[in-house]
Amino acid sequence: MAEKVFSIIEVAEQDGKWGYSDINFSEEETPDSPESDGGPVWRQVSPVAIAGSGLAALGSTEDDRRVFYQDLNRSLVGASYKPSLPDGRWDGYRVFTTEIGAPTADAGSALAVTGHVGGLGVYYFDDGRLDGGRRLVRLEERSREWTYDVSDDTPRGSSISPLSAVTTEQGEYVYYLDGLGHIVEASWLGTEGWSVDDLTSGIEACPTPAPLSRLTAGVCGTGSRCVYFLDESDRPVQLERTVIGGTKKRPESRVVWQVRSLSVYGAPAAAAGSRLAVLLTAEGHPQLYYLDTDRMVVGVGFNGRGWDVDRVGVNADDGAGTPPATAGSSLAAVARADRPGAQVYYLGTADYPGEGDNHLIELQGSGSGYTWTSRSLGAELDLPAVATGVPSPITAICTSGPRVYYTSEE
Image (cartoon, rainbow, N blue to C red; front, top):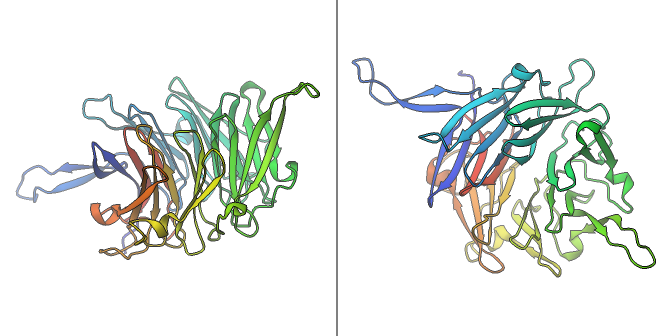
């Protein structure tokens, strides 16, 4: 039985058309010869991924892109796409353990990236072969040079901890779950090192995350930081950090973390372990997406005055609805800068024509209040099968158009 190969697939909309490419393999035509049928062959151009690899991506409106994952040795790999090249292509990669001595990643470690192309911060948990592992590692890119820092000042991540990172004018922040299941905020202060806060213990009335809770974080339009997770009843919760200005009686400003249980506004419970995805509307309002107990996509968004709940999966396609997500499906969401709306991606059950688990579904919301339509990109494009033995992450970015990344299993 042939050994399975895991590679990273990019599914992208370019000039109104969808297509896909394998960033680890390049398709080439075979030379004409008596021994050749003249068909395409695949040449490996970068290290393939390990089963269960984390996945993170970041891009620019000029279409520069960076994708990060773990190779077979659990070294972190960064692949680069540069549109400035004559034919625009994935022009190279870096293996950070080999090149700069960065620690290898722990099995199943999540990945998070923040910043901008040319000034990135990439986070993961190390494997700690000598001391137990799960320490937070930060890779930093400055002027094409990479360095790394291993934090001994922050709590170690739990064995299934997610990672989410954001950048504001105040600095760079990463969120994860420690061994107690508490939400940790780690702030990178450059030469001063790390600052750490236990949000679960430090915020009054903050619920304890569910044992399988995922989390995600974003920056609200005012510069506030928002963190989302599932409580012990698998109901979505928002933590929002805001700065309250001074008054005559209390002239100094103060920082406040506000706790909101979104179930108060009608948000249904999530499927246990549901991935969470957040984006900002053109007005700077947060929109959260997750899978409910029927594994249908739900959206909960702030409209400037209050919160709206949208049964996206049920209401899509004029009420015809979309397939529920497969068990273990990831979830990603992006907003385009050139038009209002949102696009959500997940792995749907095989209710569409075709075989296998390659039904990457796109839900596209447009117009005032969002009218949702769906399409099966997996069936339309005959995508390589999404890895499901160890469920693949799905991550999405928007450059000149939406781009979705996942790990294939061949």
